[in-house]
Length: 212
Ligand code: URA
Image (cartoon, rainbow, N blue to C red; front, side):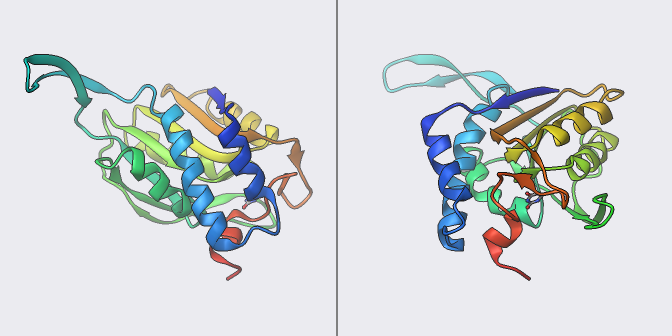
């Protein structure tokens, strides 16, 4: 798995405000979207395109456009929803599928409780949105799900990642032939005993939408 930690002062600035516990939900949502748009720029470096010719007011020019099938953006419910608009700003014609995954707070294992995705993901590049790569269980299960459906290139975008989560993903992906890349705004120190990323930003879903 290729790991790309975005190294840009605007990314670091926005991430710092997200970490601050004094940042309220509306500001958190806006900054998360802006941050994802910056990450999306890095994450779509290998988005598939095809050559086209256009007629300019002066002459013709060679260019590119997004290939078919269009990329699929998959926010993982619920916190991944807070990243969707930021991604769509850069890839407005991508299709969107939804994957609902829940983490058992005791075992920290993830399971699927809802999905709305095409049955056949052959030749699809899939952009999975999940703000926090903590234990790696949720993302590993989501990637498995997409690979089972035929996805042939998966790019996971997170706001933060923990070394434990990256290690688990690498282990679980050992036998997976599909290329997977992780793009994140920050790589933090570790997980605490509850599985929270340290120093982290707390519960991303609660920060985005309040405690429910
Ligand atoms: N999920 C979160 O929302 N935050 C963490 O720190 C870990 C998992």
